[in-house]
Image: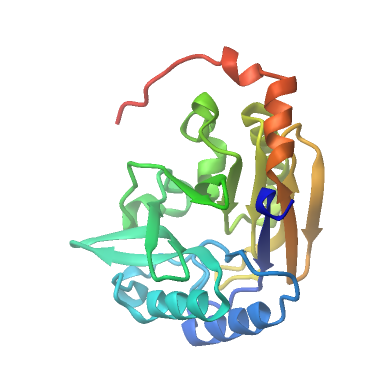
Length: 261
């Protein structure tokens, strides 16, 4: 039944390095071309700039033009728009994922695990709280890229969420880890697990193969696309998650823990 499904449209793009206008224009074209019912539209990590450490030049406030663009697109298409960008707030910089609703309401998640291998920790401040958003009865846990490697942070404690969503700029040379860990997170958390990555090459010469993926709550691969820009809409079934938990109540046996900062 309609109320038991959710369309999530994934935009796997070749991000133009540090060119906000070009990137927003291409996303607008992609979104206009979605023929399925638009409910949640997902953009990659740092979708407007690429994975840049040039915070002072590229950061915006929550009243900035890219956030305003997201609000306008969400309102125009009557959908939720989500993805991460560089945000400046109270003298700090964040790799911040925004969850923008068509009524203008915004939730946000600041990336917890900063990628020290690329000096992200030297330019950005880490987040301290998860964000689990709700839409049409689905609860969606929102994460960013490197968070994928840290299963304790993303653990589905007490069946808190139905969908685990990662947006990323994950290089091709570590694509095996990307695909394997997405599947592992689906199996251990018994939920739909979605990873949206970019394609192309950035200014540092890093290649990105995409490999955007959707896995079911038993770890089965439902979709994956490598190498080229693509827009794909997946329709999730809430009953499938619920029935999986009833048939295999493995989450009930999980260890109890508390995360300490």
